[in-house]
Length: 178
Image 1 (cartoon, rainbow, N blue to C red):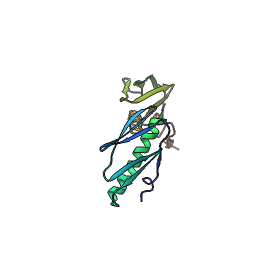
Image 2: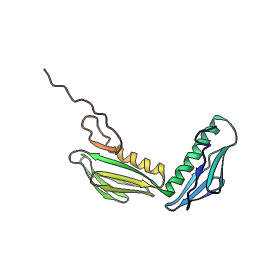
Image 3: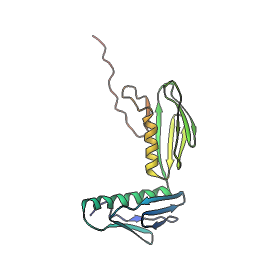
Image 4: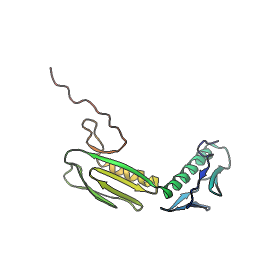
């Protein structure tokens, strides 16, 4: 049995889960998310606990079982507390401005780089730090990855955009002649 899929999902107060044929609707204080129903899985909501079961023991069904439970749990956490990722900008002459849905960055190119976030994702800036927040875990992670890809950190001086908890392994520079 799937170790992830068999764990029950606790539903906090204020969150409602409606199971449909093609998708599951999770509504909470921060908003509403739709989770697609995976094949060969069944979601049952009893009281304040949701459980996911599967119809057979095929390898694909076991994979979908764990995926369905993980997606549903991510949606419940998203509509209650939300998700956020922090990015840091390091480098001489690098600047950051804006907030809300759009930010503008000077990253050492000949022109400023503008990034517009999709619907449902908020960008906040504080000096040289960007906070990406929202209720959809996948969207928040995707936006953070897209912003990081604009100027990845380089291994010699660490200049670029990195996650706040990311460790950049530094390389030694050129060795002088003796």
